Image (tube, rainbow, N blue to C red; front, side):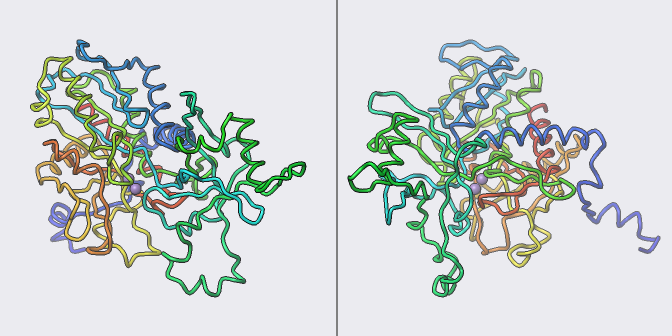
Length: 464
Ligand code: MN
Ligand code: MN
């Protein structure tokens, strides 16, 4: 570099460095315990209901109470709303009136998986199976020959609800979808990857042992149902009113000789959900009211009663405004939302799918995205320059390591988040979140540094 231009070059040309070259020793020390806590959360919360229950329990330990209509709230009060056990909103009332807006972090707690069909149980060739219908976007072949656990609830005829979890305890059995041996795969291997394993073939093997002292038909299926009956009191018709799902079994782990990465099922989007939730247990009364939304159904379009499009958010925020004497419409107009969702980390194995300089990279910090979407930004909320400017200043002033990017090359594909549904409500919104490798696979990877910096970013956003 010529000496003449050294100073000028430094001041006007961007020089992006790896997060490890920039992180402070305090942050480096705080990163490890945070990631350890996160591994506990992600290992225990694999479906939305579990995340709702877990976060409410933690919040109650820290003084949060259910928000009920007619309540009067003052700065520092901590409340939550449980949306049908599948989405949840937490708030800490700030010093300023809600007429000046809230600082909202919105993440989702559902992840792609194999849901059981309404009539799931079947026997074929003296093997018992659950039929499934996958939820969200998956590459079907990835879900064969991987250990699976069953999670969910069954609403029984007598009105009681039973929680079912099998496959997580070391003494539990696990389940799996078989795949064809390579020796006989001559035809299968010629198919496009999207067709090599079909949705109907994602049948989960449940058992193989018939009831030998029984002379009826389908003795393996009967045996499996008998075991479910003994353990949970279930009968086959109970599947009609159940939400049971197959998710990857086992706990989240550290990855790499340097232990710099984390492997888990469902980092998308519980890595951001935890980052959005955790600061509320730590911050004191903020200037603006801090709101954390953990929504369901993002993976299928944020629909339904528990998705981000649901009026449940209006109801909670309306009650919050009533409780503090503010107007909901004014509140939305002045609010700011970080739509906290994961992005794709640049993967050198598939470099051709991304624009290297417009993609997030592992260990370059939390990602901030002006827009998402596909084919000309469709489905994006496209944050304004001033909105990006605000986040940029906030993060620079508080030593949050961050980066920007977009989801792959133009016209390569794309994806959306809850951002557009917040923006539709007249709330300034920008996408922010952790870069992920192997997104939507049964095992996803994130880096500790990006995970921690996303939490730090959400925390300073609530605090400022
Ligand atoms: Mn997501
Ligand atoms: Mn997703």
